[in-house]
Image (cartoon, rainbow, N blue to C red; front, side):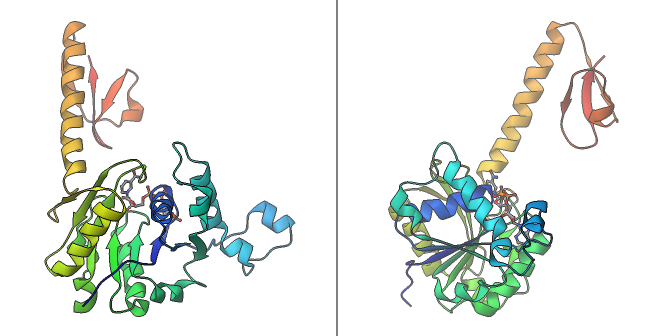
Length: 263
Ligand SMILES: NC(=O)c1ccc[n+]([C@@H]2O[C@H](COP(=O)([O-])OP(=O)(O)OC[C@H]3O[C@@H](n4cnc5c(N)ncnc54)[C@H](O)[C@@H]3O)[C@@H](O)[C@H]2O)c1
């Protein structure tokens, strides 16, 4: 089967989704950018007499997301012309438009259940050639695809862009055991040749490569730096089980429940 990417959709117009949509628009790919419909009116909308049924309200989240993209620094958008490649919409009224695209990139909150629920809906509308990927930072690709059909799973993979997507070169591509080789080939060549990324193929292990490496090196760096500082000041560490908020002296936070402080 001949796969191609001529039209794309990005779901989630937050920090990463907006940036990825802008990146695609910058290389001339017509891109549908969708986000959720708000559940409440803002006071401004109430004063203006709008209701939750008005398009302006229903597209408020995606409109705000895109506005933030247009103001971001360094610029997320290549040019004024590239803005014309973006179509905004919401996940209720415009969901069926996903049937027209060749690549759907999910860039929503990092929550397995919410992502799985979205992919269940996507499965109902995607065309059979459509490639679907998740920008998850570290959820297992296999787990996200669980429960989906064989055909969906064959066209599913992880595409992990880094922030800001237009400026950071790295793109991690994460297949799972059912991803078709030809789907991988297309996404790799599109990533390298069209988007100009440095593609790294990762195993479907928690946090993939870059984040795993960064979390280990950051923890190590913090430990060593703090140890040196405290040795210099003649202090030694005592490990305690208190929340960071309870500490009345400068502390180094390692996780939600424990901190280290000097004694
Ligand atoms: N921020 C980063 O540096 C970064 C880098 C790489 C990957 N990621 C990954 O990208 C994804 C998005 O991260 P982000 O930083 O853009 O987050 P964000 O908070 O900026 O955006 C989250 C988006 O999800 C949408 N959303 C919220 N609830 C939803 C729901 N129930 N259904 C559908 N959409 C919903 C929001 O409206 C928003 O558009 C996450 O999976 C994250 O792990 C983030």
